[in-house]
Amino acid sequence: MKQSIIDLEEKFAHLENTIEELNDVVFRQSNKIDGLEKIVKGLSLQISQDNGKQEDVGGTVIDDRPPHY
Image (tube, rainbow, N blue to C red; front, side, top):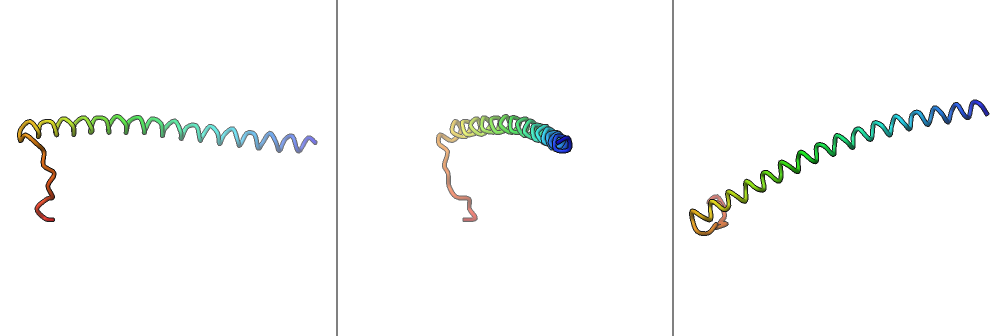
């Protein structure tokens, strides 16, 4: 009986460690995703501003194929 309790305590300790490691991974991924979302929003804003500048200059933006097609 005592050995089975010791075995369960060991398994519990390993599971606790695994959960902490997974929590750290999820936390780092969440921070990375937040940073990437900020970058995407910034790039999206920059693209929309650039498109606005092109429309102001030329009247309309033409989506032609590049000359190598």
